[in-house]
Length: 297
Ligand SMILES: Nc1nc2c(ncn2[C@@H]2O[C@H](COP(=O)(O)OP(=O)(O)OP(=O)(O)O)[C@@H](O)[C@H]2O)c(=O)[nH]1
Ligand SMILES: [Mg+2]
Ligand SMILES: [Zn+2]
Image 1 (cartoon, rainbow, N blue to C red):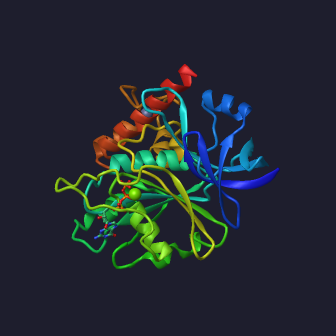
Image 2: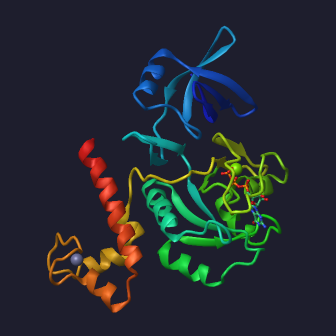
Image 3: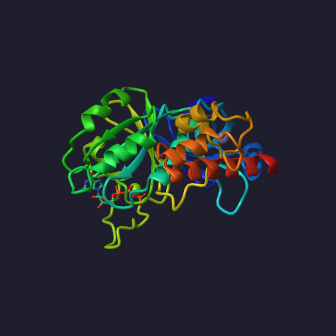
């Protein structure tokens, strides 16, 4: 078999990056069966393929080192959005569509992915409320935060250590946050389509499929379409909410649900004003969603 990396996945045809070039390929019958059950190669995956009569056929899917997943829309199953990334950039604009609760969901999924999450705040060249920076750092506890402008290039040098040869970075975030613009900037070319936001600040869902793109310096980036919402499949809540986890150690009951239990250190922190009620609500919502899913599985 020849190894290759999935560069694009267009439902049942794939583009493989073979080193020197690209190759169209399809799944063999046993991988097609697996695909119908929900396990299929995705962008970033390593596969083994074979050429038969001028046709490339994928016959093996290799084990993943990381996977960024969400819960598939309308279904209770995992959808892997990007495989084998070393780093996931959680991209959010400082200007439009700024939402800390959504960032928390991306952090939870990013920390569960097996890749290292890094928050990348874009559009720093525009006017935005300065307190947003501190607010992001409060939410992204223990996670690196970078502030960039894809327009002027400011701040992009700080990403260089994550873009060394052979490393893969997956770009995740809402539509209009500037994922494709960042890729173009790193490529030094307008290879990917980007689009201005509508007047109401909403993105337009410009990118329509996931794609692995080799950069001139030898790193690889995965561009993805903005998600309308991120339904979290798997959350690493202890990593995403270290503040709440630490407080919970002080609760009277070890199985405290921080609801109406007496001696709850978490509720105490909310009444003291040291923990934001919205952050506790986000923690509970994530715990709830992911445990509901556990029960169904
Ligand atoms: N001023 C400024 N504009 C930016 C920056 N980054 C992106 N933009 C603009 O924001 C708009 C949306 O950018 P895209 O790169 O298309 O956003 P995207 O995240 O790829 O969106 P989807 O493909 O829909 O998920 C475009 O008009 C970009 O030119 C930035 O750092 N500063
Ligand atoms: Mg895009
Ligand atoms: Zn408690």
